[in-house]
Picture 1: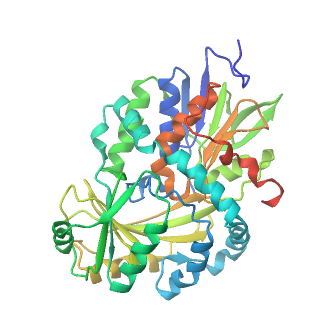
Picture 2: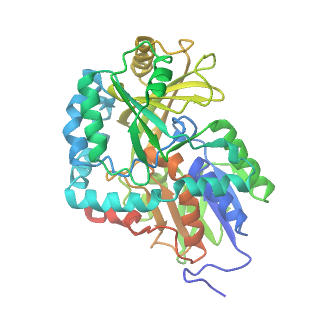
Picture 3: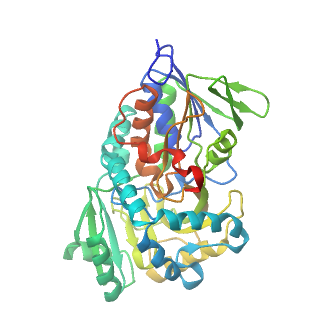
Length: 425
């Protein structure tokens, strides 16, 4: 018996390529759905963003960053002007073509399509995380206390409030911080607080290492197999995909799912998919010793484009959008800038802190790629989640599980078809 997608109903097998949070969630979801699943965790040329992000479940980020408003703001956000946007000259040949595609994707029509697509994907992102974590007995890792946005000047506070009031934030809402909340925020920083808002509906993972352990542990307990190996390429034989290691080892399955983040481009382009993906690198520093109270929601210092998150493991300050290539050495100036922000704000942070840099997989329209390949009947993909990888991991896993089973997906995945980039779009 076959499904609509030509996959054997049973015994069904799956190979998931990529062990970041999207890959882990997808492999776990497929295994729990009765597919004998192998997760191939590939070594990376650059650390994955899955475990170095701010831990923020950002359901408010319904508007794609490929927008006219974002483009207008870019000159003022450049790193050399004190901002968080970095365009390294050494990677000019990587980010110029990407930037041209981003400009095209920021047209009002495409921006509207992107908003509608992300609205659907984010609609039940929190619910998807609850369902997944409950299945691995780790529901306590998801905190639902929203987050704060803080401004340091009256001018930026007025502009920031107006900007958020005009934005589409999906199911998330916000209000002015109360006097008590402002008082608590003032205890966290020596910097001025000219205004602050508190979002509701968003959330946080309390410990990303514990999240990885819970997902891996749940996957193995359910019978899944996890191996560390590098997939050299994907071949299409008789209309079906086979994943091949450089050693010659072949991985065949009813469903092969590419969730390899920024490395997905190298796997899919040789079989005919256009994947104009860039490594959008972010940086953080983290202190283990901090007086920042546990349970404090993430705080965005918007004037500095920096988010500060209290994890069980310490306090993390994260920032930067650096368009570059995988495997490039980190730019130490980014960590120095973060330390400067932390010092100027007087945060409870034991300097210098642990350094991290990793690559977000980003497509020019700031939408992920989720779907089934037209090149092979058993090939699926889920990558390119940019700043929303953690946020959308569980929801993406549910969508891939439904897609592989030939069922209706929980949200419309048509806007996320990777073939939207055919013809240079």
